[in-house]
Length: 140
Image (cartoon, rainbow, N blue to C red; front, side, top):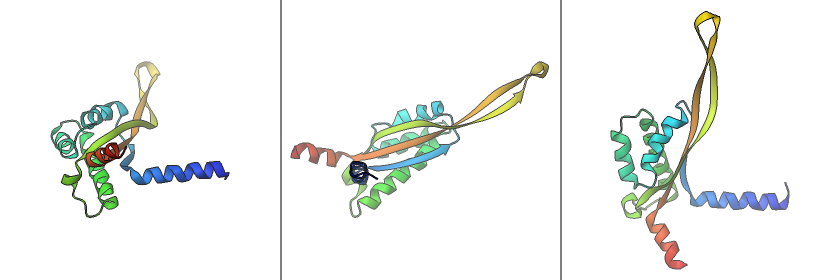
């Protein structure tokens, strides 16, 4: 590996240490349905996002709720001794990417077949603290 590539890799690794995130891979729900749920919690405080996910009737909400709990746990491991209430955590970024698509055939009339596409997705949730943002703006 070249020096420039190694330096860039180390830089990206350092940036990831400052981010608090969780990723759900190969979730067997179509990305379109998942985006409807994800869009509701983007930019919300963590407690409010958990309430939204708990009481929404869409079926991907249960998986996203579990993913949000995982992101919170990742934040806690990097910030031991800090309370969640004091840090004012919020959902900074969320996005859904398409994953593999399983292709199936369904019999159709007159000897034909229709293709059924079973889509899946990758979901990423990134958290941030309002206190940390305020500290960075006051130092600049």
